[in-house]
Amino acid sequence: MRQSALIETYLGMTVVVHSDPMRQLMQRIQRVAQTTAAVIIQGESGSGKEVVARALHHYSLRASKPWVDVNCAALPDHLVESELFGYDKGAFSGADSNKQGLFELAHTGTIYMDEVGELDAKAQAKLLRVLDGVPYFRIGGTKKIAVDVRVLAATNQNLEELIRQGRFRGDLFHRLSQVTLSVPPLRARKDDIAPLAEYFLGRQDPDLRFSPDAVRAMEDYAWPGNVRELRNLVTRASVFAESGVIRASDLALPSRYESVQEPLEMISNLEELERRTILRVLKQTSGHQQRAADILGISVRTLSRKLASYESEKEHAYSTIGPHAN
Image (cartoon, rainbow, N blue to C red; front, side):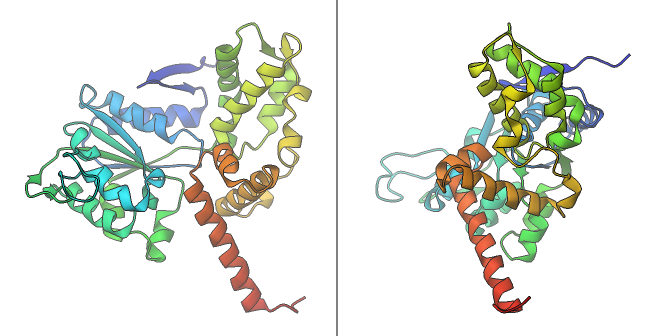
């Protein structure tokens, strides 16, 4: 008999585990959590990287110590260093008092750095020194700060490709990736789809249920936005449900993106899937980048960077092939 879904909450975030890939991941999390190793958590946007990080802290020997999380992509370039490492009074205009950085606040505990690939070169260099246990100065400070912090980092980017492009330090990558955990996309763990959908629906309206055809439609869908997209779809369907049963037609999955029957194997790689998803969502929002970023679960800064890279690739292909190529 197949096991029922496991539902656990870590630091306020809930994970629903039913599929074999996720059960195996949770077993790895509990083993890795007991070590002091820095961890990189890889996975597509919306797949559940943050709940993995929170589970690592929950099961660690630092569970009773501070937990600090930061989205590196959401930090303006000129504030990255001051937010992470703090500043002293008078360090710059507006610095009216001393401010502890996030690493100080996480002392003896865990810091989770989401979208770590967005850090600029200066912040990467200072982060490497902190990871090596070297005390550092706050901005404008005269006293060195020593911290004991376990770093968990997450990314939906290929950091090794960023290293080749000169945008990420190789030594920092190796220091962060003492252990790497990969969160499978939702389409690779279809056994989680129905339990997740039922969990989200129960939070919205416990009197509603899914029809069998709705469950099949969700399991046949590719979910480019992963768990975040599933949660948003269930929320919308529950709001507009006209009876106690949500049917496949109520989900309107094909109209939100391309047909659920599009064979996934035709997409050559993860980067191409990501590009298609971004351009499709941007088209749906009539080019509104903030709304598109909200749907995709990424920052506007990240979205702008990706769009610029697509334009650069297009220009490169045009200059290489030429305007009259057949």
